[in-house]
Length: 207
Ligand code: SF4
Image (cartoon, rainbow, N blue to C red):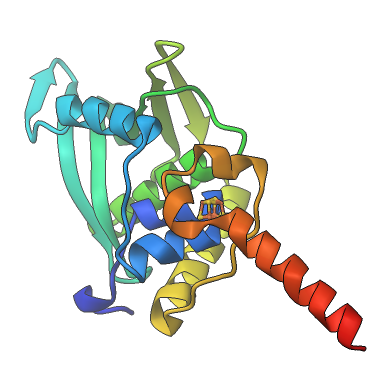
């Protein structure tokens, strides 16, 4: 069990899946830069994070719900959680709003699954599904929260705790994704590659 001062932010999981170095720069070194992608996301979340709820028939919709897990050492917020009354009981569905479209990596799925794990602990229940609303395709996509995703999510949570607890900043490695990273100016992955090459050449000529 973790204590509140050991909690990591839910957003750290997405950062870690995108790049462990980006996660460490943000959550260990407190570095932050906005770019067009982060600004788009912020604008969308300003509209969604209204801290309200409404009831329509058997459906209650809660916005900007604060969540946490002491077992996983995790805290954050759900954009929306739907509570629907069914014959079997209350079905709980976290819904995450994304400005773009479905990603190539699993960061969105991991974020949603981590939200579900928090809700399960807080409400002592099981959350079977979650959903995304993607702004670019203007469509809601529902997904099952299966065992494999839960296992992978818990692995990533443990890896982020390790980075934060050890204050470990992984080395930069220039990859195509760096072009869309808001921290490229701070991280300077190309310079790191050049430094590695220079060190390699130095060692080669000295031997
Ligand atoms: S610029 Fe590249 S290596 Fe550096 S933090 Fe961003 S994604 Fe990671």
